[in-house]
Length: 163
Image 1 (cartoon, rainbow, N blue to C red):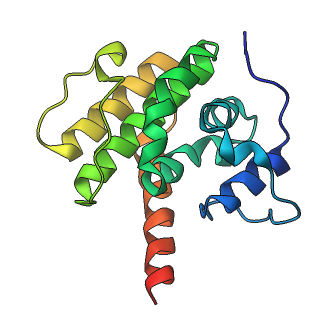
Image 2 (image 1 turned 135 degrees about the vertical axis):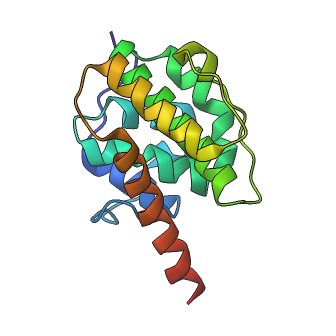
């Protein structure tokens, strides 16, 4: 059972925008203090009923790798399905950070718990993560494509910021 308080989609979107994560359209109506509570924000995103908000965990961690410090704490607050979402999306962000040769490095907290054996080839890690995500969730979703979509949107945002 969830240990987070009820947080609206608008509050989540506003918090993402306050952090410079423009993955979801909308927001800006009011600034939420939620962005100053990383573990709560991460947990609430993982629990969201909106798939886009759950997926925003990947760009959140890529944009704010310092939030990796709160990933394990957030995972402890979650029931099994939301915890799996967080673990898989966090792991995808870790490997995309390596793939894009970002100046960031996030610890690999969840591979072992997910039953993965990380290798040096980031693309192989992402493929194995997607396969394991499908097995553990039972959802017949193209998880690799889902992860890549989030990363592409985040990269586009970076390019627009530089232009």
